[in-house]
Length: 236
Picture (cartoon, rainbow, N blue to C red):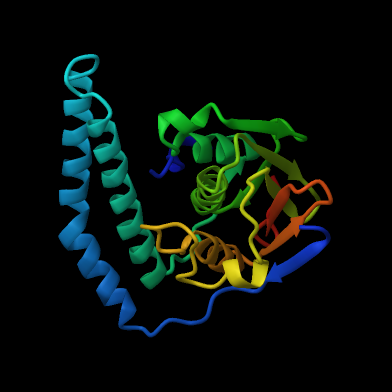
């Protein structure tokens, strides 16, 4: 994707998202204030915990410190998701490949989760002109949701088409989600989660002019497909 792109960072049930509702303008100021006040402290806290865990590896860390680090990471993600919810981004298209988008999504996951993502590429090296970082963030959120819901592994499928590209996340999580319920903000069945993952994906995909479709197969797998169009008049 060149130097412009850097990583950030059940049966026949079907629902197509159309995007989250408009937010009041002053929410942008709230998000900016949260980012200004909490971004640096959260980064510093997470970095300190990671350094301490590495220093105590195999010694006194036991099981407590990794658990604390996971909670810090969850806190950081919740704050960032809340900021993202109050401050929608404006797409900034750039030329990128499908591989760069999917690899970036995978690399943004905690190292312990990356090995549980299986990638299927239908169009290796295919290029398109979209906001690659925004698509990558959407995919990362979908993968995280699937793994946290109990799926052992997640299949990530990417495919180029004449209009743009499609990305599908397939999981086998035992947790059943009603699409209409799950795509609403602040709905979550897990403690300490804001329930903003799917709504943020739905909103950002809509901002890019795409759509999100959630289906459940007869075998119990949940498939979430994100389709994003290439910026009008530009071909990869």
